[in-house]
Image 1: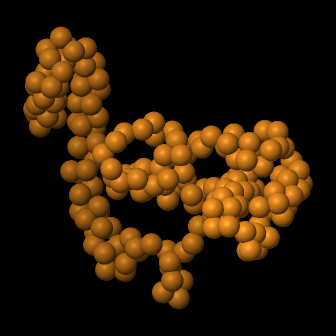
Image 2 (image 1 turned 180 degrees about the horizontal axis):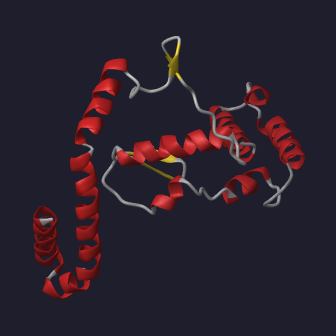
Length: 187
């Protein structure tokens, strides 16, 4: 019981040092509850220590604390989502790259020190892709596909093989934009 009281007082002084004495006084009811829990569970841990120790040793010896495996393979978990699995994977890929110092802005990965709105990573503005394909926002997949095919026929690089270099570059750029828009809108 004395140990629980000492731990509670130490916690009070730590909170007072971090948040100040006025806020630490507000934590007194919480600290009293924690002290009671220390007394109760501390007694249980001390009383049943030999049984807990035997249980921990048994788990170490038999290896039951390891992950559940069959035939040396780790178990794979599949999560059912309402969205596309690629969107789910893309979300975590971008999040992990952002944590490593890089980020996406308008679809381009950058590792410089500039800070943009981090929501651009996850909630991309797709209005420009609708404009490129010249369809209304929220168009059906069939409408997007028809618009893509029409635009792709119009700007396909093979159609302009004998044109000037400037014209070929323009249509190749447009064709790449059309492909990117189609990929982004059909995910």
